[in-house]
Amino acid sequence: MKIKKNDKLHSDSTLRQKAENSLKNKTFETGPDLSKGDALKLIHELQVYQEELRMQNEELGLAKKEAADNAASKYAQLYDFAPSGYFTLHKNGEIIMLNFTGAHMLGKARSFLVNTFFSTYVSSDTKGVFNLFLTKAFKSKRKETCEVILTTKGNEPIYVHLSAIASDDDGECLLSVIDITERKQAEEILLQSEKRLQQEVRDRTRELENLNLSILSELIKRKSSQKQLKKSLHDYKLLYSYLQKVREEERLNLARIIHDDLAQLLSTMKIELISWKERPEKHDSLRDPIDSLILLVEQCMTAVTSIIVELRPVLPENMGLSPALKQLFSDFQKRTGITCDIRIQEDAYSVDTESAYVIYRVVQEALTNIRNHSQASYVTVKISSTSTSFSITIKDNGIGASQEKINDHRAFGIIGMRERILGMKGNITIKGIHGKGTTLHFKVPVVE
Image (tube, one colour):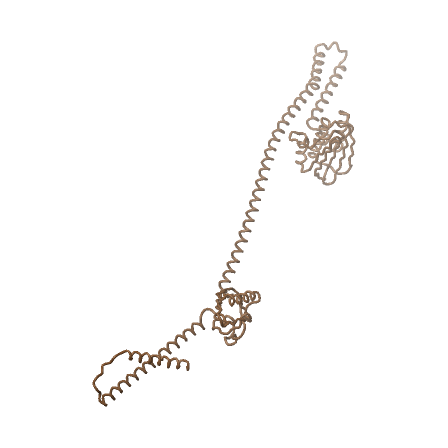
C-alpha cells in the first residue's frame, strides 16, 4: 500500500508542476479590485471546487482499485478452476505454485503439493521422458511438449500432455497439464480394434488360401479322376474288343473241336449205319457193328465232355480246389514240358464254388502267360490257406516281365486276373526281375 501512496503523491506533484507551467505561459487581464468579502467568497468557491476534485479523485481511485480487484479475482478464478492443470516449477522440478485442477490430477491437497517435486508423481517408465523434457524447456527457453503418465497411490494412472516454457532469468517455468486419458483409451481401443481387424483379415486370408488350395487340390483330383476315367473307358473298350476277339476264337476253337472230333465221329457212325442197312448180308453177326457203334458213341461222349470242360471246368466242383489245381498243373506240365513244383498246405478249410472257379481261372491265365511269354523251364507253386484267406504264389525262372508290360493297358490277361481278384475283395501283385523270372501272388478272403 505504501508503494501505491508514493506513486499517487508523485503523480499529484507532477500534475501540479504541469499546471503551474501552463499558467506561466498564459497572460491574464487584470480585473477590478475585489473587496475583502468577494475575495473570501472566491476563496471559498475555490476550496469547494478543490474538495470536489479531491472527492472525485478518491472515487476514481476506489473504482480503479475495485476494477483491479475484480480483475485479479477473475484471474484467480480462471487460474484455479481452469480445465487444465497449471504449475509453476523451479528449475529442479520443485512445485512452487499450482491450481486446483493440477492438485486434483495429482490426487493431493494443493497445500501438500507445494514444495514437492513434480517428478514424484510421474510413472517410472515415463520419468526419463519428463526429466529430458524439463531440461530442454529451461535450456531452449521455448515451448516444449511431451506426454507422460501420472500415478498416485489409490488412484488410477492418467495420461497427460505437458507444455512448458521457462522464464528468462528467475529459474522458473510455467507448466500446463492436460488430461488425455480418454484420448489414449480411445486410441488404445482403436489400436486393439485395428489389431483385431488385421488378425481377422489374416485369418480370413488364410482361410481363403486354404480354400483355394482345397479347390485346387479338388480340381487336380478331378482332373486326375477324369484322366483315370478316360483311361479306364479306353481300357474297357480295348478289353471289350479283346473279349470279343477271345469269344470269336473260342467259338472257332469249339467249332473246330466239334468239326474235327464230334462231327467226324458222327459221320463215321452214319457211314457204318448206312453200310449195315444196305448190305446186312455182308455181316456175319450183329455183334461186330454194334460194338463198333458203341465205341464211336463213347468217343462222341468224350468229345462232348471235353467241350463242356473247356466251357466250364468241373474239377473244382467235383474234386475240390486243391486237387483241381494239382490236376491243372499236371496237365500243364505234360502239354508244355515245363516242370512244376507244387507245395500245398493241407488243411480243413474249403473255398466256396464260385470263388474256387475264379481262383482256378486266374491260375489258368497265369499258366497261359508263362507258356506264351516267360520262356521258363521251371515253375514253383505255393498254395496256403487260413480260416479267413486263401493265397497262391506262382514263380517262374523265365526272362522276367518288365513293369511296363505288367502295367500295359493292353495286357488283357493281367487285367482280367486283377479284375477277378479285386471282384473278390482280394489283392494281387505281379513283379518281374529281368533274367530271373516273374512272381505272381494273390490272396482272397474265404469262408470257413
